[in-house]
Every structure is written in C-alpha cells, then in structure tokens.
Length: 157
Length: 172
Image (cartoon, each protein chain N blue to C red):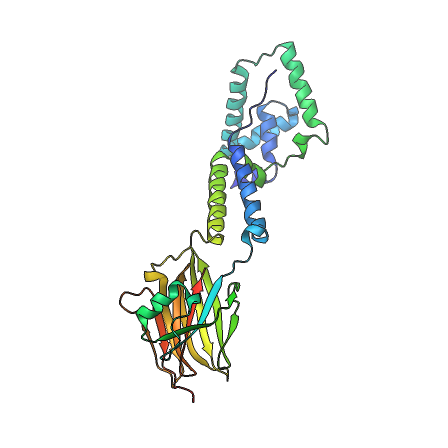
C-alpha cells in the first residue's frame, strides 16, 4: 500500500500557526501575569545620642556606620510592598510624612523606581528616579526627626 | 487598421473556420476575397494552417484501455458538480500560498518562533532592549528637591551604599 508523504514544509506552516496563536493568547495567560516589584523599606532614626545600633538592622548597620558618624541607629519601621508597574505604593513616615515609590520599569532583574518623600502638606521634599539591581539598596536621608534625621533604606527585588 | 476592424467584428473565428476549410462555399469565397485586401488576415490564416499541419504531423498519443478508462473516469469525476476539484478557486488561495510554498512556510515559521521567544524573554525580564551597567547596583537617574532643601548624592569610601541626602531645615 502506497502512502502519500506529507511535504515537510507544511510542518513549518503548522509551527507558524501555533506560534501565532501563542503570541495572540499568551498575553492573557498566567505566564504574562502583571509583574510586581518587591520593595523592602527600612525607616531608620539616626542621631548623636545614646542608644547604639539597633540589632534588627542586620548587615545594614555596618554599612551605616561606615557611611555616617551618628552614634544611634534605630529601626523605626520596616514596611514592605509589591506594587505593579506604574502603580504607586506608599508608606507612612514619622512627622506625618509619606514615602511614595512607583516602579516605572522592570527588566532583566533591574528596577527603575520613582521615589518621593512627601511632607505633611503633600509637597515633595525629594523626588528622585533611581535604577536598582535586584537586591541592591539605596538610602534616602536627611529629613529631620526629633534630635536627628531619618534615613530610609529602599531595597528592590 | 482594416485587420483590427475585422478582428473587432468577429472575423477571427471566420478566419479560423476558413483555414480549417469548414465554411460553406459562398462564405469561403467571400473570405478569400477579403484576404486580398487584408495582408494581416492572410498572415493569420497562414498561422492557422501552420498550427493545424503541425498538430496533424505530431504522433498521436496512445493509451491502453485501462489508462483510457481511468482517464475518462477522472474527467467525469471532475465534471461532476460539488466535487472538490470544482470547488477549488481558479486562483491560488492565501492558504495555498503559505501552506504549500516551502520558503514562505519556513520563513514565516522562523519569524513566528523568534517573535514568541522575544515576547516571552521580555515578559520574563530575562532580556530587554536596555541593560545598563549599574555600578554597585544603584544608579541615580534624576533628582529634584524642594526650594529650601538642597540635595546631594554621595557614596562613602569603603561603602557600597549610595546615599541621596536632603538638607532639610530641622524642625523645632
């Protein structure tokens, strides 16, 4: 019995068809689910007063001591969030201030973030755009608090 | 010009019939008279003669009875209304162009695979159009501060931390 051989090139057309369907349907599947940026924030009170270094700061304490000359580092709060792309995430800061972080791009394990520290009146004390590699930390410091300053450590990923 | 007019008036078919010697005698004589005033018509008749004589001199195709039976059955099948052969359009459909053309099929398949791979890698953040080198994992792209709050970016020697420092007036 003779069998007709199916031309090989027709398989390519099948591949095209399948890939086109995947490209059309995949954006709606879980594979392309909305990406979020995992954010970890540590709000630290730094001052030249007795108190020493808060043990909860972990590895960050040594870095802080290498960078600044304060005698006291106290972890006040450590909020965490996972905002989606272009969605703002806010955390409250002492002194009726707010921290607002918006991920604007997430690619290849790098995060572009817009970070704003807002005063009680809603004005931006600082408005910065930073690019962080996953696991890297940037410090935003200077806002006064009690007898010292606030240092905000922001880690992405 | 005369020949063009003759052809427009349907003289072509009469010329073919004349060349095949299929016209009634009266008509045959009329066409022959016309040929004297139309050299182009005469050339056309010569061409008809040449074609028909060539066909007559070519050896005839021979088929065995089985082949002839199969041939006739195939012709009948194709003539039967509603068959796939009749349903097929005269021009190649888009499906035939892409489905049956090896190079187009291969190229479109490769393009589709690359497209899907690229989309997947971008979405999975494995690959992106920009991939800057970020020293110490932190890059400060831009910075703005309030009017009474100067700002500076620094990194202490020996530290991996980049600091954005706002010189805010102390609150009482």
